[in-house]
Length: 89
Image (cartoon, rainbow, N blue to C red; front, side, top):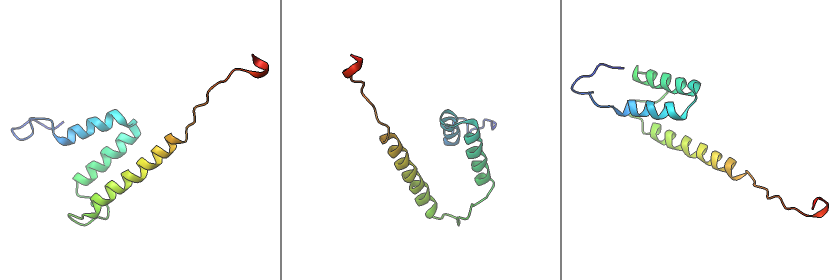
């Protein structure tokens, strides 16, 4: 971790984000996100221009698409009720 100075003596949003990711992701997924964050920190723009508003649009668009897929998958799970009767009773 970084050394503590007057400016970063408290836990930053970056540390909170990493903690949240570590609790929700597998190690392989966490490593992918952490390495991508490091690349962003190092100046890699991933095809976006400086202060490109399309980045925020893409972030929320990707979230919405994947959230809908997850909800659709969850909605397709059926619960069956066992009813006794017929020859088994």
